[in-house]
Every structure is written in C-alpha cells, then in structure tokens.
Length: 430
Image (cartoon, rainbow, N blue to C red; front, side):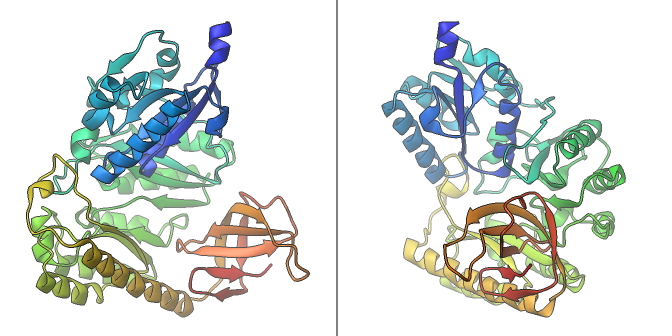
C-alpha cells in the first residue's frame, strides 16, 4: 500500500480541442482509487493529453514534458500526439508510459503498471463506453458524440491520428445527458472531431439526435460544435428552431477564396457558403467560423479577393489562425510560403472586421438575454463596486459581465433586460 500512496495524486494536463477535454473527463471517470488534483504541484503523477494539430502544438507539449521531467513527476503521455510523437517521447524517456486513445478507459490499470510501456493504437475504430458523471467546476458540459473524420484537408493531420468518422450510439448519448442533468448540468455542447458527420454510420443524422435530446426535456440550452457547410441540410435547419437550441452557429469556412479552398482540398465554395450564412443571418443567428491565413498559395491577389468576399459574410465571431506547418500533411510540402508579418497583419484585419460586426449585431438585436453564469472573481474594493464580478455566455455566444453582492450565482440562469453594450462584452445590471 505504501507504493500506491506515493503515486496516489494525479494531475491531468490537457492540450488542444474540446474533444481532448472530454477524453480527459473519461480518464478522470476511470481513475479508480487514485485521487485527481487540480494543481500539478500537488501531483505525484501527471497525465499529458496531447494535441498534435501543428508543429507548434507538438513543441508546446514537448516543452511541458521537459518541465515535468525536471520536476521529477511521473509522466504519462496520451492523446493525438501518440501517433506522431509517441515513440520519440518514449525513447527519450520523457514519459514513463505512452498510450493511445483506445487505452484511456484502462487508466487505473495503466497507472498500476510497474514497468514502462508504449501502447500504440491497435483499435482505430474504438468507441468509449464510459458514462461521465460530472464535469467538475463546470456549468456546462462538453459531450463527445462522434470520433474521427473522413475529410482530407491538405493542412490537417487529425484524420490520421483520430481515425475514420464513427458515431457514439444514440442510447449512450441520451443516457449521458440524463446523467449530466442529474448532476446539475443544464447546458451541453455536442462536440467531436467532425460533429456534422454524426450518424452516417448508424443510418441516422445529427438532426435526429438533436430531436431526441430535446424530447428528454432536461436541458435548458444545447450548443453544437463546429460544422462543415456541406453538412447543413433542410432537416438540420428545422431543428435549429427548437427552443433549447443556441442562436449561434460555428460553421467552418477556413477561407473565402475558391482558389485557396481548392488548394486546401476543402469541400465548400464561397458562393454557396455566402448563401448559407445569409440564410442564418436573416434568421437572427450569430455566426462564427475558422479562418486560416498565410497558407501556401495565399498570394496578394488571392488575399485581396478573399478579403473582398470576407466582408460580405455576416460573421460575428471568428477563430482565425496563422497557418502553421504540420509535418506529414500535403500542405507541409507546398511552396510559396507567406511571410509571418504579412500573415499576422491579415489575421488582425479579419479580427477587426468581425469585432465591428459583433457590436453592430448586438446593437441591432438588443433584447432580453438569457445567461448561464460561469465564473466569479472578487471585485475591487471600491465604494461603487459590489462584492463579486461574474461572467457568462448568452444564447448568441456573447459574454455578459455583471456585478453582484451574492456569492452563489455560479451555474444559475439569469435574464438580463438592462445591459450596456461594450466592445468586448455586454455589461449587465441586476
């Protein structure tokens, strides 16, 4: 028992996307007698759930592994990086154990292993069976409904490390939502590697799943992760009218030049994308997207075309990236690299446009907002301030900031009829 006590406390370091964060929750749910801690300094064991989407992501993970080794932590390495960097991490003794996605539900057994190990992926079609019972410290939960991706975008390594698209059984997802609702969760975000592909291997679809979730009657709000334009059909448009659905969609454009979309091996094209975005804008939705600037081939003339097109889109949120090479992808072999300072300037141009769009949307659609309170800090000690500063997100995925003397508002739903519109967020009054 003394050896067990020495390795009892476990800290999870999660890099990357929402799917990785859900995978971490799966591991936490299977820890058995080990204790999960929220501070790495308290931990005997550190489990690194890695991201490998770019070379830069690899470098960030690698730096953290070196830091943990220098602190004499017992490190385990998992996540998407196992397929691209796992052997290297193991050979250089940066981790005691390395294990692929399909092993994460066996985490307790792995942590008891008395010899170093490297378990590469041998079940690429694996689907987890764990029901996550809680999301500690969270007001909303991210729920993974599918795994893998069948797209072949030229810049992306993820299909090769997450495998082909496959869906979680509907009954498991519904049971998971009921379990989360019983623990106090009232907002869920459906996530996955390629959420819009849900159900294609089960003779079902995402719209049908959403209807079933709505019929449970246990959620206040349902959000959907990133969607591909080609995956949005008339049935999906219909379910967005259900009262639990968010009034915000994240639709992955990646670019607004057909030339670049072809180079990126994307399925979408500008004309149909714009038509789709205008449809949702007329329905009163806030609209977000991803955009990669500086990808090889984005010449000045292509950029000018893309920028002119971009200004036509009713975008209110944006997750822009400066292109970062990922070894093993087709894009990494392309020439015509764009200078870093040029890419950064292009990125800031896009962000400025969308920031103005967002403010304009909030002014044009000012109405009572329903906010799930998520975080709290003590306000500054001034005569004009109240006890605490809270923030949360409304149905349009815009942030609300407000002050209150109450110290127990986390996880509660509040309706704001009176609020001021600022550049970064809305400032509510209660």
